Structures are given as C-alpha cells and as structure tokens.
Length: 135
Image (cartoon, rainbow, N blue to C red; front, side, top):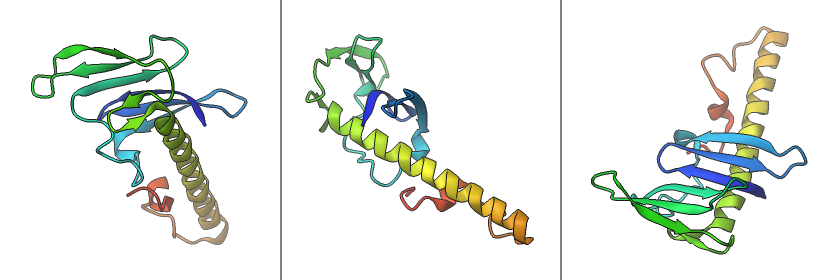
C-alpha cells in the first residue's frame, strides 16, 4: 500500500510507495483512471495531505470562490475524506501507480518490438493506449 498521499483535488495525486525504495509517484488528474470515484472528493476539498511531513489534514475551500475555509485534521488512516477514507485512498493510489507502471512497460515493449521488426504498431500511441484502466 502507498504510505503517503497528497491530493491536489482536480490537479494531481502525489504518492510515496512502500516498495522498499520509498519511490515517489505523481499521477496527473487526467490519468487517475476508471477506478477513481468522482464522488470521493467534493469540490469543497482543496487538498488532502497524509504524509510524514505533516500536518495531516484536509484543506477545505469554498467551491464557488476557491477561498480556503479551514482545515480538518487527519489522525488515522480510518479517518473519512469525503465519501472514502485515507486508507482507501492509499490502496487506490498504490494500485493505480502499479497499473500505470505496467502500461508504460507494455508501451515500451511495443515500441521495442516495432524497432526490432520494422512494424509501426505503437506509432502515434502513448502508454495510456496500453492501460485498460485508463478510462
């Protein structure tokens, strides 16, 4: 499971993966994939911060003005964030990062196969075309 997550709502998701290397991983909002539930984070959440730097919190905003309205502390992975929990967001983040990494590997393999065989199967494509979880 990811150990840290910072979500800039509608912008990007930053993760630290628990893979022995504490690898950081950024998911652009457009790349969050089909398993992201848009109901998880209402427009009144600006940021979700769960990391080693602290403080762990939900940064709230007025959805119509974008002005900050205060912070809600997060103390445990079981704490609610919108309609989900910190733990569920960490699990989702780890899964999505692995899906993206696999799609990138598949794309790179297709490009190498084209180069080796003189084909153009990967031409005009990106890793997202090799990601069955993209949309």
